[in-house]
Image (tube, rainbow, N blue to C red):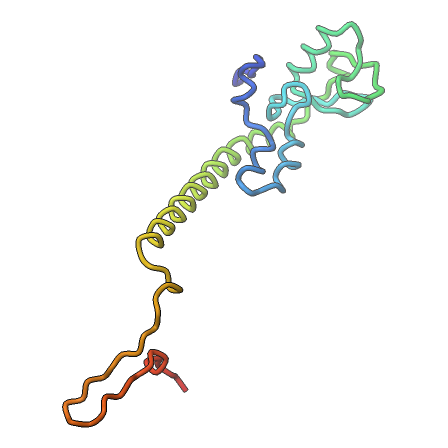
Length: 170
């Protein structure tokens, strides 16, 4: 099992559900929050559900929280369950949620990597386009000037407007 990040100074390095806002996929914020423990804020590791209120936590997180607490209360703010115990009958494993969190951990890294790569590629193309645009005169600054067609005879010179150059398909 991967080690949990426990130090507050390390929390800045923790991936959060809000990361999806930064890469333009806000719809995944609520989804990812549902796969995170309310105690450690990490994706679930061996999730267990507390009987009585059905809140879910990582097994080590809820056991640690209850060991440190003088009350046997659910750590979720506003929860009225005050009869939480670390006994096996009170903490029920949720294997389907463990599988979902594990699969999401892999998919999240892959998806986030692809989105950030695409974002960098888009920014690079925008920067290149901007520098190319700066290097050439804009279309608005170029004036359409009539072009004179030279005729080999003594006839008059005919002025051909640029709009006449267009190819028309009928």
